[in-house]
Image (cartoon, rainbow over all chains, first blue to last red; front, side):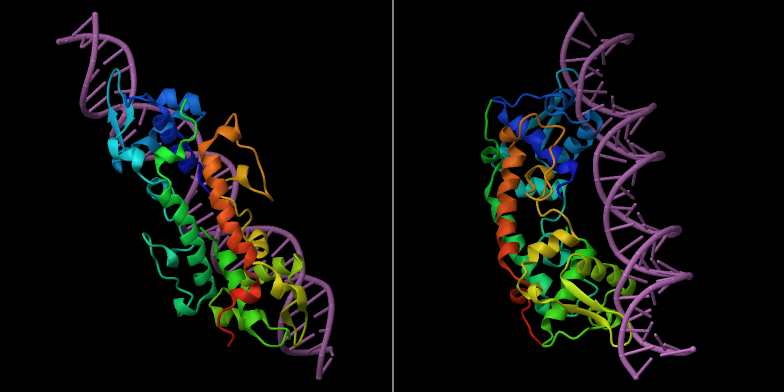
Length: 139
Length: 139
DNA sequence: TATTTATCCTATCGGATTAATAGACTTTGC
DNA sequence: GCAAAGTCTATTAATCCGATAGGATAAATA
């Protein structure tokens, strides 16, 4: 299940990507447009900025804006920042791998094998879809 | 992310499916073989029984066993019992649909569209894989 | 320089969920 | 009747989630 954090983050990115220029947009503008708690959105945008996908400008006329690379970044990248692992189980995660303490041998674990399939499929979608493609209705 | 409940449940089903006969197996046997807390497994098997996938027998020589239909049941069914919705967001769930309170219009929501793709892909795997196929190493 | 406007950052909170445990009960086989 | 096994309810401890509060900091402008 997608956390609200991720959902809100993706919606905010979509909002920014739908704009034609990349002038700073205030948090309050986005939060009203997308019905997101302003304070919560604040922390979400902050983490996207720290991850290098958004720029920000303080003070009057400030706000958040997309960086150049961001439009061509796959959704998978945002997902990992906001949600964490894409895999359903840490032992099949590429970026957040962790061994199961049960499970003597991964190679013979049925759950492991199935979840690799699921991961590969999900990943193929999230990796191939860039933010630009993600946005369907440029308004 | 898969909860332990689901993971344990699938491993227990796999354990049972790997057996040749469908004689009752005690919880303690499964929990030792698969390194699962016995009491926790207890409640998991109970819910699989109530859902109609396992049979049980009380008393001496008792335990849990697969029902006939269970080997040919897709993993998706167990997943829904143990974990809940397969969709990443309730608004794209087939069996657990729920409207988002933000989001005035699902048809123009970018997150919605993407998550439908992810759901369809995941679903295709979980629906086409039966318990029998799930088990890779009949021991 | 003072004021306003905005992000930045840390801390905290209530509620929900998760994983696990405890213990009393019920049924079954011998 | 006794022991072995599942059944059921309740509780707990820990973690996470979504949201909020409030001050610090920085930038623009008058």
